[in-house]
Length: 168
Length: 184
Image (cartoon, rainbow over all chains, first blue to last red; front, side):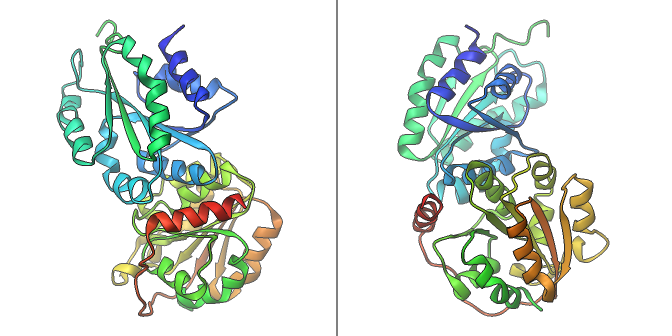
């Protein structure tokens, strides 16, 4: 089974039924799979803080949400994470494309990559780093943990996890 | 009319609905005028009232009214295409458009100058966009609730604020009692 399907299977198995996405090449297959599943309402966002607002509302309405985005979005969403998701104590699994790590072809992506873990650490956000495909075996437990503790939780998925950038 | 006068006038209409209320003075005013468990007060995160309300409307069947401001919509302008393309007929976005950033000292917004949020909402694809003058809001809002069609209301009014205290209720308490009201 493809890793994209496995990830979305874990979301569905954990009753995640409201997923917002801001696109990323690495996550394109996951986003396609989210769109295809009848169990999930997929709502693309124009910006990640908007997406976190949608997720907050959906959760208060009784649905389990998730957001799919790039790590650059951590820079965009710090205020929202602190004053909405954390302040009101809401769960939010964040499946994040960790750009700027090993095998990255675009130099500018490294500039946010070097801040990503430090920012998440500063925000006291539990953070998991998927580097090998087998790391995804923990996703089910991470989702259960997120909805147990009502916190935003970051899942960083790097280029090695996705098998690199092909011919680049 | 200024925003607090408008909220006082529509409070009886809002009372029976789920309301997501914008950060700062709008939430403080609504909290003082008619505190209800069906009110979700934003204590931070400028701009996301419309997004939280849309997510809530898409997740369940009860009517949801997001009370927003022109400045807050401008800060999250991407919300309007998302609303237009994800129609929830139990969702009303009420933009109190006083042409200024009220909570920070009434600095002018671009909505008070050349930019029409009514025209922007229409251009983004929102189907039912109604611009209304403050004194006429009540029947328009009630009509939007009864019509059960997703509606964006742009309520033009005067800028101005009243003195009132901040909300000291714990955010988790606000959220918990709101979720119980949503589920009841």
